Every structure is written in structure tokens, then in C-alpha cells.
Amino acid sequence: MRAAEQEAIAAGTPGFTLMRRAAAAVAREAAAMAPHGARVAVLCGPGNNGGDGFVAAALLREAGYAVSVHLLGEAGRLKGDAAEAARLWAGPVEGPALPPAALLVDALFGIGLNRAPEGAAAAAIAAMNAHGAPILAVDVPSGLDADTGTAPGVAVQAARTVTFHTAKPGHLLLPGRDLCGALVVADIGLPETPGRLFRNATALWGPHWPRPRGHSHKYTRGACLVWSGPSLATGAARLSAMTALRAGAGIVTLAGDHAALTEHAAHVTAPLLRVAEMPAELLADPRLTACLIGPGAGVNPATLARVEQLLACDRALVLDADALTVLAGRPEALRRPHPTVLTPHEGEFRTLFGPLPGPKHERALAAARASGSVVILKGADTVIAAPDGRAAINDNAPPWLATAGSGDVLAGLVAGLLAQGMPAFEAACAAVFLHGAASTEAGPHLTAEDLPAALWPVLKRLYEAP
Ligand SMILES: NC(=O)C1=CN([C@@H]2O[C@H](COP(=O)(O)OP(=O)(O)OC[C@H]3O[C@@H](n4cnc5c(N)ncnc54)[C@H](O)[C@@H]3O)[C@@H](O)[C@H]2O)[C@@H](O)CC1
Ligand SMILES: Nc1ncnc2c1ncn2[C@@H]1O[C@H](COP(=O)(O)OP(=O)(O)O)[C@@H](O)[C@H]1O
Ligand SMILES: [K+]
Image (cartoon, rainbow, N blue to C red; front, side, top):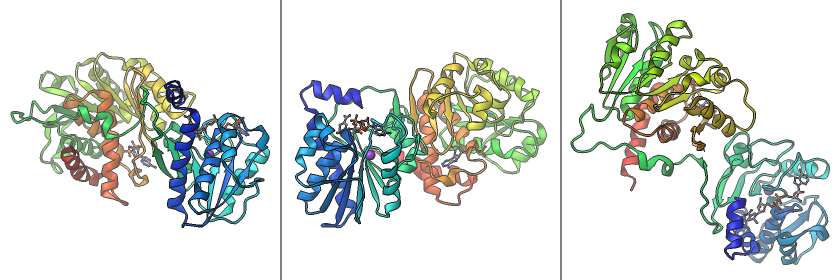
């Protein structure tokens, strides 16, 4: 953001012009939240976030709102664009005590927050939260660290947050995402800057989406092997296999011992069933393009031996659940010259990689580098990270996705996309996004079994999109 701002200023757009555009977006959102003519209280801080507040206050007053402006600090100490913004506001500048109002505009701190709010700043934030009126946060809810999604102290709980140019990690990572309320990203005319950190969206992976051609047959669409857990632990692999088929893999094989396959045979029709002791018995088939192991596998030496055999093969590979746990503390064992995707939740992640410092996207990136693999660090704010330094934060998954078996569905989705030749990072991002979209489609009270069916309309819409 700061680089984009510098570039724009160097190219001749004054900083104050950017501030005016930002403030116009704030005023637009405020007008959408408060009835015309209502009382709006704008709380400004000592930096440019406060500057946005002053300009927005002037715009709202022009538009007919009853606006009061409150400053934390002294008007005489405002500098640069913020001082110019304060001059634009013709009315009185009051202290931080807030009057009754229909809407509060939080322009206290933005991306310049550099420590936990204390004293008057902490009191002002607490007073906003206790006020009762909805809060529109300018750029970032004050007190939230835009880089990490964490709040070092007290933070504003906004109803809506309007940010500029692009979402920051703190808007997408928890608890930041919850503090923001509804997020609005406003264009303020900054140039596109090349970045390595993304908000997960169709544009990130859509160009790599595998589409069958007229002459495709099931083997050219990709063949996927899903290793099954033993008898009475087969459901997880079945969810994965059904989802891999739904993802578009031409053929999916469930493999394991005879008792396990007997259970599968009682449930599924489309997947092939192959009795095998070890994956190597099936890897001779050159048509096989991707393998998945872990769901229901069990944490035991047999699983470790199978994982090691699969790591040594030349197919794309997804390791989930128990296949990650058997490699506890050995991420370097995952290095291989073929696409590999790991799908740990926080517990499996810690077991495999140990405690890593920093915000979630940085932890996932460190794990991706250590393992040479694409890492999907799951949770309500799933992060996808690649060893080359790219990372994406996902924010489309509703909380009812937290249900037993939904992780197995995600693993199968990744495997199905890898089987079709989709590159690992893009396949992982697509899978996480579509998983979230399918759970939104299915709605509250879904079970993991509903997800492959719910993916169907989501995928159809993907095909219909231009
Ligand atoms: N960077 C850009 O391209 C643009 C930035 N704009 C606005 O400018 C903001 C960034 O402005 P600044 O860099 O001036 O930073 P801020 O206005 O976010 O905050 C910095 C000020 O707050 C003080 N401060 C930080 N943490 C504090 C704490 N815990 N307790 C008390 N005081 C604290 C600092 O000492 C400094 O005076 C953005 O969030 C956005 O609202 C917009 O005007 C549009 C363009
Ligand atoms: N609060 C939440 N909001 C959205 N998605 C969630 C939430 N909690 C978990 N998830 C998602 O649900 C899935 C759970 O996977 P996992 O923990 O492996 O469960 P299981 O092993 O039972 O399948 C993951 O994709 C995770 O990202
Ligand atoms: K703010």
C-alpha cells in the first residue's frame, strides 16, 4: 500500500488528492449507513487516518448531515496532509467525548498504528464501542494491526470498514476480519503494484482451471488414487474420493485392504476399488496422475511406510490428517521434485512444523519453505502458501463449514484438481475457495456429505462465467 502510494505521488498525484478520494469513499459509505440529515460524530486521530476523517466530515456536512468532529490530541500538532485536511473542516473541533449520534466514524488510527492504544486512546476506543451507534471504520478499525490481524490492546468493533486500494492481511485474518464488520475496498486510483500476498479469489486461479476438451476421455482428465483407512475408518477417504470425482478427475480409485473396500462397495458406485497392501502395487499404472493419503489412515508405522512410498513416486501428492502427523517434526522429509500439497489444521501444523512465530500467513510461508510444499493452513481464515513466497488468505468460508469430514472433502478437492494437471498453488487456492463457496451454497447445518453435491452448482457457475 505504501509502495503504491509512493509510486502515485512520484507520478504526480499529490498525497492530498489520494486523501480526498479516500474521504469521498468514507462519506459515501457513511451516507449508506445513516439516514440523510442524521447526526454523525467523526473521531479523528493524530495522523493521516485522522486526515481522512476531517475531509469526510466536511463532505458529509456539505451533503446535509449534522456532523461533529472530535480530535484525540491537539489540532496544532497535525502535520502535512492531515493539517491541510483539518483546515478544510470549517466547524469546531471538539474533544474526544462523543455526543449522541446515529453513526460514529472511526478515523483514529489506520495502518500507522505502532503500539497498543493506552490512556486517552484506549479510552476513546472503549467509548466508541460502548456508545451504541454503529461504527464506520476508516481504513482499519482503530487498534487493529493491519499487517497481522491481531489487536495488541483494545480495538474498535466496526459495523463496516472502508479500506483503500486493496484489503490488507489484517482485514482478512482473524480476529481482524471480525473487528472490521462488512469490508468495502474503495479504489482511490493507485497503480497496481506487483505483490506476493493475495486475497483468495477466482482471478488468482481461474486462468489455470482445467477444462475438458471435445476429445477428452476419462484418463486424459486425470486419474486419482485415494488411499483408504481400514475397516470402520473408511468414511473420510470416501468423502475425499467422491469430491475428487466432482472436481473433474476422470477416474478415482479407492485403495486399501479387503475389509475396507467391502465397506466402500456398500456405499459408492463410481470410484474404482482396488485391494492393495502398499501404494507401490498401484503406482505402476502410468495413467495415475495424483495421489491422496491421510484421511482416516491412522497414526502408525504402516501409514508412515505408505507415505514414504508415495513421497518417493513422481505423481502429484496430497498429504492430509494422519499422513501429516506421522511426519511429526520432519518437514524436510516432504521435499520432492513433484507437486505436493499439505492440508494441516493448526494442531497438525504444530505437530509437523513445531511452534513458528508471526502472523498466520508468515507461519504458513515458513512451513512451505521448510517442506518445499504448498501448505493449506486451515481454519476460519485459511491461508495457502507456496515455497516460492506466494500466499493467499481465504475469507469466504462460513462457520458452519466447521463440521467433521469437511477437511476430507477439501483434501479430495485438491487431489482432484492436481490430477487434472492444475499447478499446486493454484489448485490449493481454487479448492479452498470452492470449498467455502460450496458450504455457502449448502447453507447452515450442512454435513460434510452435502458438500460434493453443493459443489455442483458452484462449478456450473464457474463454467458459465465469462
Ligand atoms: N497510504 C496511503 O496511500 C493513503 C493513506 N491514507 C490514510 O492514512 C492512514 C495512514 O496514516 P499515517 O501513516 O499517518 O498513520 P495513522 O494515521 O494510522 O496513525 C499514525 C499516528 O498515530 C500515532 N499512533 C500510532 N499508534 C498509536 C497508539 N497506539 N496510541 C497513540 N498514538 C498512536 C502515531 O504516532 C501517528 O501520529 C491510512 O490508514 C489511511 O487512512 C489515505 O489518506 C489514503 C492514502
Ligand atoms: N469457523 C470456521 N469457519 C469457516 N471454516 C472453518 C471454520 N473452522 C474450520 N473450518 C474449515 O473446516 C474444515 C475442517 O477441516 P478439519 O479440521 O481437517 O476437519 P475434519 O478432519 O473433521 O475434516 C477446514 O477446511 C477448515 O478450514
Ligand atoms: K480507523
